[in-house]
Image (tube, rainbow, N blue to C red; front, side, top):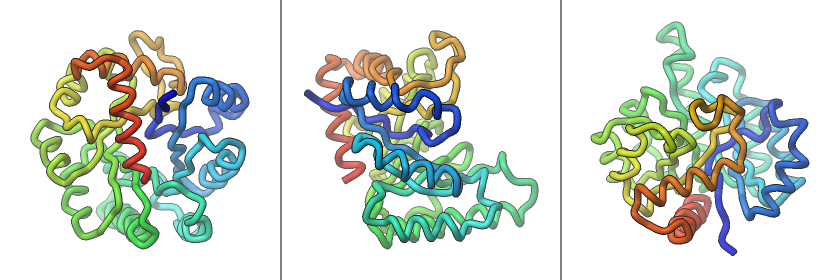
Length: 250
């Protein structure tokens, strides 16, 4: 039996708290592993607790750009203290949506760079938030020797996708793939050995998902859609994604 990997989900978010026993049971039965990303001190702590409940929850610790103005010291310390236990570092990145001054932008970049340094030091993959900041991220990343880079929920142009492929980065696609033509076009232009899938829960998705909180069991639908775009069978696509996911998390 092959495994599906959710490359980016916030299982440590309070939205999932009441459903976690059912989610973990479903993951076990459906052969699904999840890269559980964090955003701040509280979610980092929750992520580590969750990873102790199931070996299928792969812990990623990090500071989301939305939280970059908070004191980052505790999260840095948690990464260092748990560096043998964590799978990766994330969700980290850049996003001007969350700043109101150039000073805050510089702080955000500093926090991002500090976490990249930790990923380099401990040889961990990173899960990167890059909304409308891909060019800035492309400028910063070559300064670091990062084991594996994921640009989660890739939303760039074809030109930026080509650059990501040239760098050897992974990109991930989620439930939007089922109904967003631009995402389908991007996937069709992505090198098959660099594709991952995700849910990014607890984000809510419209159309066929009825604005419901993303569930990890959305993954098979995403994989099925990807298989049609890639002109592969569902089983072939699962194998490709499993191999890609294993290489990403090393």
